[in-house]
Image (cartoon, rainbow, N blue to C red; front, side, top):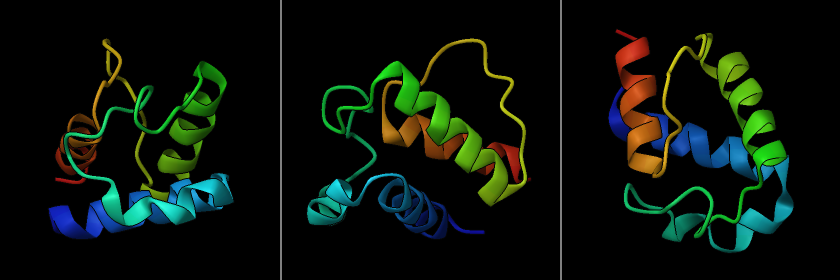
Length: 81
C-alpha cells in the first residue's frame, strides 16, 4: 500500500468517525496536527486508534503519542511492511 493510499484510507476513517471532517478532509496533510488542526480529544484519539487497527489490520504499540498525520502515516506504513 502506498503512502497516498494510506492517507486516503485514513481520511475516510476520520470522516466515518465524524462527518465534520468531510468539509476539510482535502486540506489534511502530513503536517496537520492531530490535536490542534483536527481537534481530536484523547477520547477521539482512542476511537481513531481502534478504527485504524481494524481498517489496516495492525496493532498499535508505539510508546510516544503521534503529533502529526505524517507521523501516523509513517507508523502505519512501517506496520504494513
